[in-house]
Image 1 (cartoon, rainbow, N blue to C red):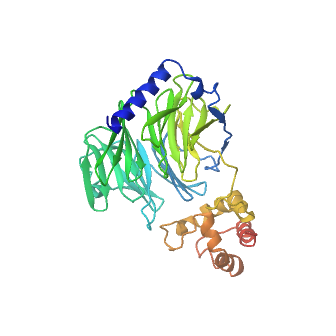
Image 2 (cartoon, rainbow, N blue to C red):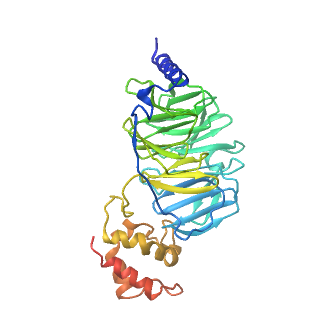
Length: 398
């Protein structure tokens, strides 16, 4: 008997157990779930209208919110632009090739692929990915810098100048996994290895979502159960919900989030934790955050949650006085007075769009803004209060 067949049998047995009544060992009552505490994370300080949200993508201090009537770009919690030339967004991803600048990609209602240019507008790049006449529904970026698209023809892989179409299943969800990807179709899950162009299929009636972490953890859900891929290569039951209440799944770093009714849960190293009393929408979809947080989209609204203690925006997670100043006031100063020139693709050539960028340039910023007052340049204003906030930041302890 081959491994793929073994995996299918394991799934059939686990599914049967759930259908016949959740085994105590996998249920909340049986002690399979421990407590999870989360808090909301601010990402839109002024409460700017974002429309009916369909997707979200995040890189550094830049958050792109894709809605029915356009897309809004926020930098350091402040909206810097809204592009209404493209509507009906369906999917989004961040392309982060090794050693190159990250790019935000979005799929619109016509199945065209767009890239964010200069934090201001979105350009149609479907032709660059070899997608002329091939509308897509899902975009997923791979760690290698390649991009996967789900189309009517199957999966389309764009890797540099090469575009390859393969496999016939119509996937409704794709997720990076190792040197390949996970694909979800009606009734099954594929684990596909790109170098060998081979893989395995797991039959799972009612499969709703798939997710994978950078270290290779795989989690799959149905409406009433969570499965994890074991070291033996078989998917096994991890958690059985009290009913058909599961409705979202997203991998944020090494944490996999799921939605269970009005609660949020996480799967970390085979352990399940879940909140009590968070009250997210029962139809919410989840989207990942590179910081380990989770985006919750329900009823058109967008909320961000974290399970970690509140920290400054520093990439090393250390809370500092400077980090507090950035979070509380300086990020808004940057958005108002600096973002026109100092975004990653700005005219100055100096990227100051994140806390860590300001930390690295602290001495130069102090000299040019506080001491010499030669920045911002003529034609750009900076209030005395904002200059004082920059002075406080540059003189704050690490």
